[in-house]
Image 1: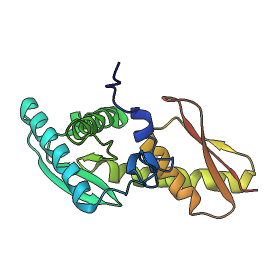
Image 2: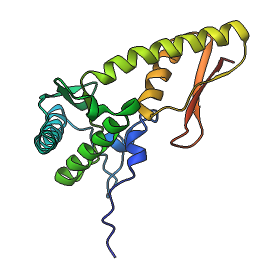
Image 3: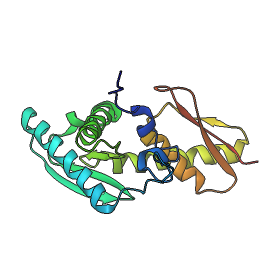
Image 4: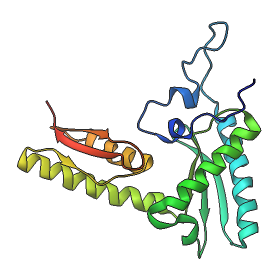
Length: 192
């Protein structure tokens, strides 16, 4: 029997882990050869596939939005900008996460390769990054004042990555994730 399943979505979504499987970097192929990371052209092609998928979805939903495809930080990105797009974000970005996964599956279906595509609607991710930076800084201040670990609320992989990035840039503290999705959270503690 042939396995026709799609690679685990959790592995591609968990941006906290080193993305060797998603990028193919350092992953041996059959015969011992290493796969190379996707080129800028391949990444842009992934963003175009995802943009076409999202555009079709917007047409079906009768939503207006401008769609930009780009490559940023070594990953394909699709940004949708327009009015009345809040329904595509959903509560705490839940709908956006689902749309991102559907777009990733559309890319996988056409290319046969898992994608680290990042989808943003209405600037939600940029705004959320700023909010999470403030949350991370507050947690770091508490840890430094009290010397005790601080557990944050459960977050998506995107949100946890944003917090880890801020905490890792500061001295005297460290962070780690604990728990199981959808209740996975970050603990910020004094560095050893």
